[in-house]
Each structure stands twice: as C-alpha cells, then as structure tokens.
Length: 286
Length: 175
Image 1 (tube, rainbow over the protein chains, first blue to last red):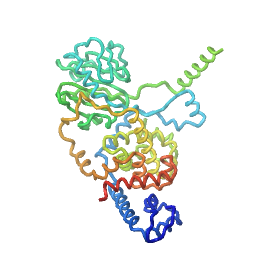
Image 2: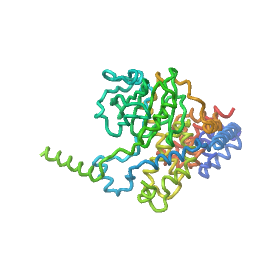
Image 3: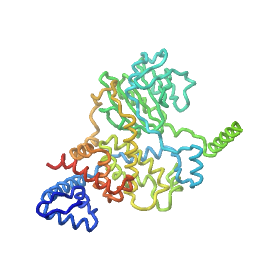
Image 4: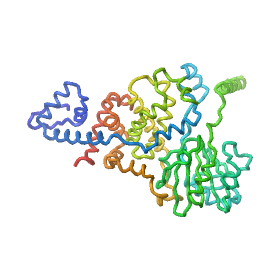
C-alpha cells in the first residue's frame, strides 16, 4: 500500500500486503496501516478472508502419505549398493584440486527407460531372435549388432536365462546401454540394460509399479499384447520386452544379475593420470 | 559400505542418511509431491533428494533439518524442471497409453484416493515459481526470509509470488 486515501472510499488497496499480513510478515508500521485500511475497506477484508481460506485449504491438505513401503524400499535398495563417498568430506584445497582435474563424484545416473524404443527394436528382431541383418532402428536409438565378446562384462547376462537362450547383443548409439536378445522357445525377448536409477515419472502412462524379489519394478502391456517390464537390479536398470506372458518376463527378470556400481579408477590413480596428462601436455608445448 | 562407513564423513551429532530417510521420508515426500504434482514424479524426486542427502550430510550444519531438506528438494525440483524444458517427454507411439496391466495394488489405490485432488490440481496449475513459494510457505511453514534464501530471490519477490500464487488458487478453490 503506497497511498493514504479518505477512509470511506479507499481507492488504493493492500494487494500484495494482504498475503504478507496474513503470514505475519509485515513490519509493525505496515501492519498498523493495514489494520487501519482493513477497518474501512470491505473489498480488502473480503480478499483477506478468501486468501485465508486458500491458505487453510493448502495447509490442511499438506501431509501426503508416500505409497506404503516406499521409503523402506529406497533405503533397502540403496544400502545394497556401494556408494561413492561424499566429496564434501574432502578438505577445501583437495576438493579444489579434484575439481581442477575434473573428477566428478555423483550418485547413480538417472535413467529414463526407453520402453517405446525397445518395443520398436523388439519388433525388428526376427522370430527366435534370428540374427538381424544390420542395425536395429527405433525412434531415437539405433542399435548396432556386436559380437558376443564385444559386450562389456557388466552388460553380458547369462547364456541361459531362466531357460531362455542368449541370441545376439547390440550396442546402443546415443545412449550408454546395451540390448541383448533372447530366444525363448521361438519367442524373442529383448532386454535393454543401462546403469543408473530409473525414473518412474518418465515411463509411459498406464503402467503398474510392483516388486520383483525386493527390487522395484514396473510393468505394462501394449495394445498388441506385447509386455514390458522394467526392473532395478542394483545399479542396473533392465527393460524387458517380449510377446510372452508378463509372468514369463518376470521369471527372466528374477534371474537377471544385480550389478554393483561400475568400477572406477581409485582417486590416486585418477590424480596420477591427471598429472601425467598435464606433464604430457607440457612437454608437447615445450 | 556400512552405515558406519558413512558416519566417518559426517559431523558428530548429524544423523545418517538412513535415519534422515526414515524420520523425514514422509516430510520429503509431501514437499516433493506438492512440487512435482504426481506420485511418479514425487518418487523420482525423493530418490534424487536422498542421493543429495547422502552426499551432503558431511556439510549439514545442525539446525532445521526440515529447512535443509526443503532446500534440497526445491533445488532438485528446479533442476528437473530445467531438464524437462530442455528435453520434453515425447509421446510413445509404440506403447499407447491404455490397457494397464491388472489393477493397481490396493495400497497404491488407497494412497491415490486419499488425496485432495482439487487442491493438488490447483497447485499444479500454478507457474513453478509461484508453486514453490506457496508450498514452502504453506506446506513447509518457512518464513519469507527463509524462502528467499532457499530460492535465491529477494524477499519482495517471494512476497509477490506467494500473493499471486494464492490469488490464482483463490480463483479455482474459493467460489
């Protein structure tokens, strides 16, 4: 409020001061002036009343219960994983040095399971996961066929997965993941793997959350009867797609290995590497 | 790594991240849900907050745990908002949004039914800046100064956002 007008016909109102008044955030002088104004201004009194009701509604609606067991499950899952120690525990100079050499300490990457793309890639695989010729193209990801020995260890699931047989492996372009195809008695099952923690909010609508062997999971069926299951196993997010019963996908998911945090060079090794790189650069410069 | 392993890097008297998760999980979830607007995004936000709690406990100064957690939750939410602006969710033509598998678990259905939907919907309808200000004020109970510090804007801006946010809510919630 910036103007004082005749008490009977105030034409300058409290406006933003009303919420601050309601919250006890006006200084004593402003509060006294607001009281005087409210005593003569029916418009501001009505607005104050309405804002008070809004505030009460939001306050009363405040406490939300998480889904039962949610917090416990997050704690349980995270406790099972190794976790990178807090960088903040490192002293100031050392932290600065780590920043200089580009060492980043972070939690698990956040994974958006590409369910639609895996479904599209699945459609491109032959029956019984017959080796596809060339690349598998989905909307956003292209998968390039790789020989079995090219698949890094952490992305190489067992040859026999709950009775399904490993058929092919594909490296994803534009994403740090691998797709493996299994032959399940003539039906093809595609399993996409990416390290990190999956985001529920980035999954397609209409799915259902559940648990597999104590790990959080999500499932959904599309109109063509193709099923999709996403499961968090340690640090690995698996997305399974197949034209089989959802329970069959869950059987496979139960057998998928739980992965540890990927091995990273020790802090000492990283510092040595950084120093080596620095010295190399220096000698080149000289 | 055992909880004791984390304790080594945490100041004396500070709780472990697991204690924070257990004691403040409901609180974090409430703030996350009010900011994010739905259960799925709230769950993702809580997971991210707990990662940041795990990383940040070493710098936690004994004080208002709820204030500290609200600040982390707000920052994580803002980061997500920025990320989504850069990369909006694409529709998935191969998996259309229908035919959910079975019914939601009874517990989940109960959690969803107990929500005051119209209030949540009204909050979600606010611009993010207004929503954050209203949530920190009315859900968390922060003062304008604390909100200003959390969000990194002047107190006058906080006052204005809260008032505009409430005025917009009024149009929807109060006849």
